[in-house]
Image 1 (cartoon, one colour):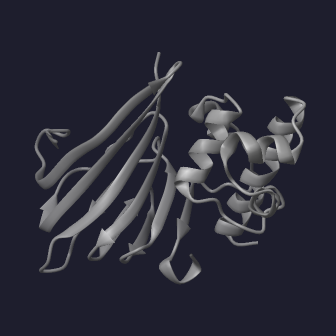
Image 2 (cartoon, one colour):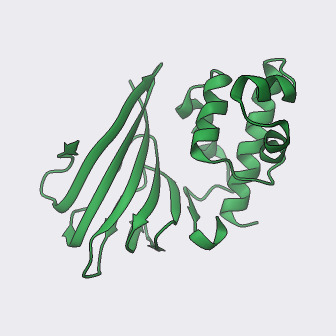
Length: 194
């Protein structure tokens, strides 16, 4: 099973378990989320990877902390620490010192209980430089423009426009733009607050 298929099944199973633990029928969840029963059924049965807005809507409706929702992934042997979804399958911030060519723009920062979700746009100029970093929580990257070589631990993942990468932020990571053009990525952080 490919990692993206594994994550699709895992998310669906987790949603189904939480829904049932809340004593909700599929129709009840459909009514509360505004997502059709047919689509929820496909998501729960691992046939469809939910869009980010749909996943956020479902998790919020089930009153589950986002970090808590994904926390089990760390303990599952089949999860390699990241999920790469390729296209064919599917406010300026200063964040790091001693970095060159990393321009973040904050879109949204919202705290939910003891976790926080931060959404940013990262514009990566040609030949941008930075050391690897680690973050507490999970990250989701979506390539809006250009190509990026993403260093994740010992792996080098080639990301192109419309590719999505979900990974454990504790793994040392850094994106590299080795092209002559800038690259742009949507970056979503799921952070646990102490």
